[in-house]
Image 1 (spheres, rainbow, N blue to C red):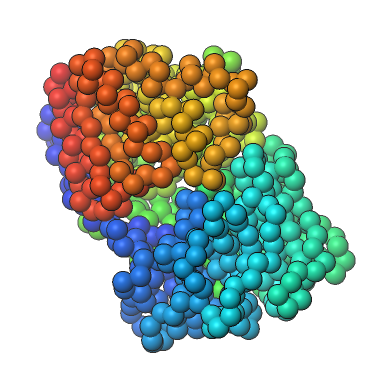
Image 2 (cartoon, rainbow, N blue to C red):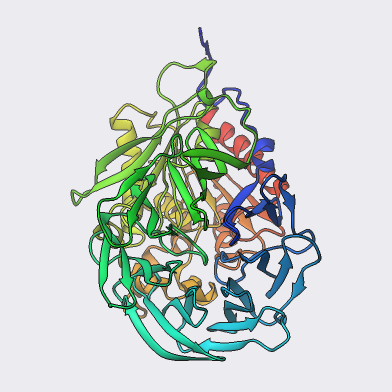
Length: 616
C-alpha cells in the first residue's frame, strides 16, 4: 500500500477521544466456589458494576445503584465471591447479595471505610479490612450482619490480603507500619480463630526490610503459599503447615507487584500446584509449579503479554485480566489449553496496524546504570512523513511502579497520529530488581528528572525522534518529574503536560492520605534534615523559572494530590505570562473516571500540542 505523506502528529486516526472515553475498566475477576461461575467488576464511566456469568448463561449485571468500591487508600479489594454469594464494598459498608436473585443487603454499619472482604469456607463469616480516623484493623462480621463487627487484629498501621484456611478456624493476613510502604517491608501473620478472638498469633515471614504478598492456603489445608522479596529478586514460597518445612518454588525473577491497592492477586492454587505470573522487563507470562517443588512449566497464553488478578477455580480453570500491545484489556478464561474471551473492554474494530509494538531500549545514566524504557514508533497504515517525528516522553506515577507491555491506550492514541512515544522506567521503577527500585531512595527529584531528560537525549541520539519537538508528560509522581524537568532542564522539552502532579513536597506530607503520608521519608528524607532537598525539588518554589508551555489537568476532588498543588503552579505561569492551559475537573479525583472528562482531556491536549509543538 502506498502511504500518503502528511506531517507527523497530524495523521487521522480511528482512536478518537470519544472511543477512549467509552471504554470499560476491567478491574477484578473471581470464580465462585462451584468452579464455573465467574464474577467480575466493570468500571463504566463513573459507575462500578459487578457482573456475573453462570455456565451456559449470558453475563448480567448484579449491582445497579450501588457503586462497588473498596474505600481504603487507593482502593481495591472490592468484592469476594463464594457459595453462590458475593460480598462487596460500597460507600463505607459491606453488602451481601445472592448470585441468583434478590437485592443487596448491608451487613456492616456505615462507619469508616472497608475493603478486602473474604468469605469463610462455610459462608457464615466475613473477614475484612476496616479503617476509621487513622485507625486500621482486621475485622470480622457474620454474613447476615445480625451482630456488630468485631476487631480481630489491631496495633499495626495497615492491613491487607486476609485469607481463610479451609478448616475455617485459621486465618492469615499481611500487616505493616509507618514509615514503611508495603514494598519496603511487611509481615505475613497467621492465627487461630477462637470465637471472636485470635489465639496462637505468629509471624510467618517478612520484616521491615522484606516485603511479603498474598497469603493463600491450599484447598486441602496442607500448605500456605505467598510471594516475598527477600533479595535482589522475588520468590514464590510454600509452607507445609504440618511439618513446618518452607520450600522455594520459584526464584530469581520479578514475581510480585508493589501493593498500591488492596486485593491484588498474582498467583493461585490449582489442586496441588500453583499458577503464577512472572515479569521479564515488562513482558509477563504464566507458569505452573508443584507445591512440593520441581521445575516450573510455562502456560500457553499467546497473544497476551500482561496479566493481572489471576484466579483459579476449584475445577482447574484459570481466569485473569489480560492484554497486549495489540489487544485492549479483556477478561480471559483458560481451560483445557483453550482461551476464551469473557469480556472486552473496548471496541475491537481498530485495525492492528494502528497499534504500535513497544521496543525495550536502554541508555546509560550518568552513574553508568542502564535506564529502561519502552519505545513505541509512529504507527499508521495510511500515512508517513519525512524527517523525524515529535515525541511524547511519558513518566509513570508512583514513583514505585513501572509501565509494561500491556495495552497502552495513550501510546496507541499518539503513535497512530504520528508521534513517537516512550514510557520511561526511570531508576526507582519496579520489575528490574530490588537494587534498581532502591536507586530512588532519598533521590526522588534529581534521579527521575535526570532519567527523563536522558530519555529525550537517547531518542535523539538513536535517531528515533526530533530533538526540537519533545514533550514531557506525566501524572501524580510523573507530574512531579514533569515540573522538575521544566525547572531544571529548560529547553530540553518543547512543552510539558502535567496531570495532578506534586509541586510542593512540604504540603504533600501534610495533605495526602494516610497510606502515603510517610512515603517521602524514604524517597526524599526525613524533615527537618532533608528540608533543603524538599525545597530544591518542589517546583512551586522555582515556578518562575518555567518558560516552556505547560498544560495542567487536575481533579477537583483529588485527595492524594490536592488541587492547590496545581493551582499554585498555574498562578506562577499566569503571573509570568508563560503559555499554558488549565483544566480543573469537577467530580474527578486522582485520575479520570467520567467519559466526558476523558473526552475533554484528549480534545484539549490535541489543541495544546498543535499550537505549541506541531504548528509552532
